[in-house]
Amino acid sequence: MEKQTIYSRLLEVQKEVGAIAKDSKNPFFKSKYFDINGLIQHVNPILTKNGLVLLQPILEGKQCSIIVDAETGEQVISELTLPTLTDPQKLGSAITYYRRYTLGSLLGLQAEDDDGNIASKESKKPVNLTDDRFEAAIKALSEGKTTKEAILKYNLTPEQKNLLNKA
Image 1: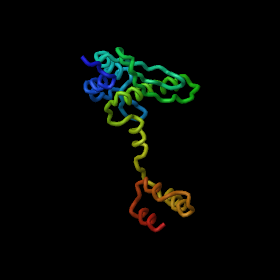
Image 2: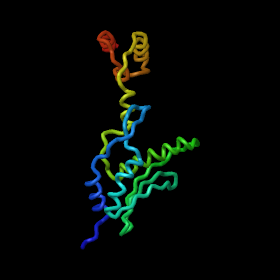
Image 3: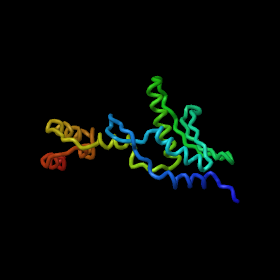
Image 4: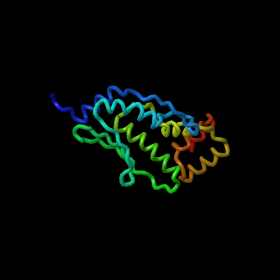
């Protein structure tokens, strides 16, 4: 019987894990994400069944997710450098966030979009540009302080579009 490599074991894990349900809500960004505890609860039995061990230590200022083949000692690692924060609560949040994303990245988990991307998309929805602000933007454009692309991020009225094209 040929010994499996860590990669062949991870392939079996990926086949079984499938897509992870986003079961937690972020009320600030009005988005969903998969909770680290739910994620680990879902993947650990599958990893164990395939002879793999998950470790998530903090090493040299980095949050690491390490999967170790219990038989051979082979490892695969995903890591992110933690931000320098003095507020323990913010640091704890960053650690939890990084644990989720290093593990998700390491296993190649399927996710529609992360809550950060969803939040940034929501914050970039075009807004209406008042005439006063539009005039200020046109003035800034004529002074070289902005670009047409920046102005086009707003919902413009037909009249504003015509004026912009003339600027």
